[in-house]
Image 1 (cartoon, chains in turn brown, orange):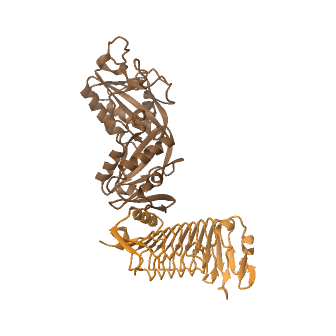
Image 2: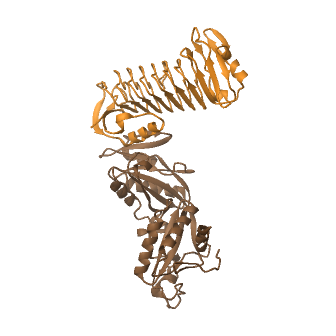
Image 3: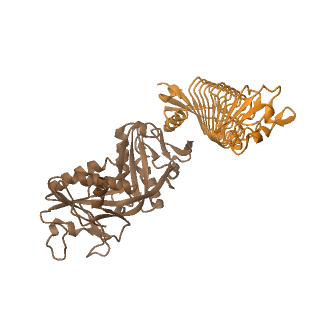
Length: 308
Length: 270
């Protein structure tokens, strides 16, 4: 799991620990519109309030902006990824979100971005009823698309989406001398990680300031509560075992979900490398001792593999 | 050898029915066995080898050469493989095919693709009457697959089309898409009288002149999103959609003398 060999990049120590992630189901939607602006509006609306399955039932984010040559209908587009614990739940979220945010979005259309997915979840199949019997469908190259008449013209939506096994909860922590340094490093990391296809960073701006621990000390009903070991204001408090080295006064976390292990590793590697900059003391990662998820990402191994 | 090549020695005096010419069937046969396959020459049943030189065996890539305009049912019922007719083909070519690729490099006679169920059928020249149509009395025409003609087609193209896509690079004769139940018929050029008569559902995309039946009603001018998906698919398969790649469509709903849930999309450059 760990190698015990010190590792640093540009003077920033990378702790000999690992990120712990867990299995999820994911799908990719390709949203197109009359212009990049409207495709992005649709994508942002669809992926809003989707930071954590704990409170949002789904985790979602923008994967990439697509040129006309990369979309099924030759219009500008955005690909988004959605993650949930199972295919059935993911399908429900897809229907809810596409119905509320893309059916309503001017000029938007929505396509399956994983046509080879081993499992299928409904999309247009669940939304076509908005057409009140006036809807119709077309089968093109073996894929069914529903045409739902709307006041603007037609909403075109693929009947179903592919679902595949995926990984959620890849992460690393940026331990910095102050909040400004932590934020600058996080922003640099996010910019680098978003260039990797097959991943999303579901939290606001790709950054989490409120990393959590499982359950709570004081409140039984809480399934997650503040990660006191990394809260600088709790250092020295009775009952708190701080994980922060001396000189660390702010911590930010980057969480990454990916379609496969290779995408998450590439993203973590790019993000950690970009985050190693002045003002950052150490890079660490969140884990639960290997008891929560079966996907472990040792930080040192990320760079050992890159060196090979 | 990776191909079976059939070369017609001389054109038959009467029509030769050769539904045995199927690439999926040839894949398991020796050269001698292929030559022994039965064909009907008028009232006589004779061996395929009496009319064709057979070269190659155990291959699902088949090429037919010579003047086969009087050879009927080439590729009829085929379920896979590739059949190329290096010239013009006779009637019922590819009738009932459900898979594979059939290419006619010349013209195709009547009933080509009749009741087609799947696969890909391409005619580089023109096609005569009832291309991908329905047999008389049948409630169903084509039920799947993609068929296109680079040239023009005769009367009753796509009659009773139920599923699949038909595209025509030139013009279409009378009663194009008559009694369609679903599916899509694209005609780049002009359509003859009676286009879409009895249309229940489905779409006729008309790129050229069109004399609309009075039982179709104008709805709006727009560019449906699926049209771009369809055109992209056709372009990938080698069919040029021409000027329809841009512009808008006037939508006419009908046929209101029947179920009336179909549409004719009349292309306009504006």
